Length: 368
Image (tube, rainbow, N blue to C red):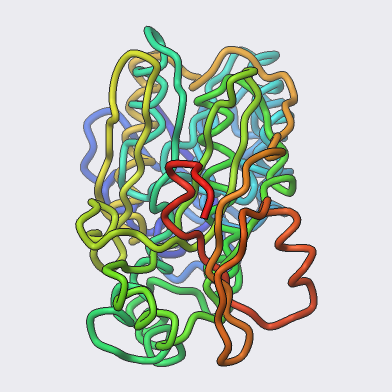
């Protein structure tokens, strides 16, 4: 199978290395504006790849929504399989990409877009074949987990640990997508699409990040026997609708999520008749993520199932009645809220510099 790589950054370059000695998969073209290696395979433009009939699969690792989304749509229209690690483009263009893949009889896979090196989506797809998914979520962002873990263990400031994460390659030069929760929200959206057989709007999911977390917040949690983790959560309501939220949470020190170190992820699901099941591994890094891209390419090459779901109807998030208690800090003053829906809390705090985290009563849905 002949493959073209779009993007030659951390993941794209690692994929190229992994495929150099592969028996059946071969990289024949690479397109990147800033490529410094593999110049013998370099494509002058994306159109060169699009018009080459020998290339049957495109591996997209550019990052960002555009031009990545347009490139993937064009490749699918041209009858080429597409594999992507780009959660921003996949979440934003999910309906269009899935429809084009179906219409043109080609594969569209994106295992590496959620969980980095964790084979989460294929296993979620397998589990739901014979059971009904009731809950998904967990730690989905390695950058935030590294920051919170290091602040807890080493007592360092947010700014210091963020700088360490950037130096190690865990955080981008502009870390906004990670620390404001957008990256986690995209991953949860994609996971919800698969779990609940629908297409959700990522912007409809309330999102609270960790940009303003301080040592004071870490110590407040520690004093009560908790650690802070950024969690993604989605539950099926009794009426079949779905609620969802991205927010830091006070996690009991004895809970599995509290022990997740550094840039690792722990993603879990609960089924109607089985589970819970949890998947643990590196949620970031070039080699682990590239390996998941490689697994998708191998699945396509042996013609295994090419989709994670079979229906693509639009669905909305329904958080009405979902009212956890919150820890909120404004400046140096912190307080505990009464049960408050996420959207209502976000509206109350709009325009303010704050840190908010779910208190543990949320899991039992009991009053404060």
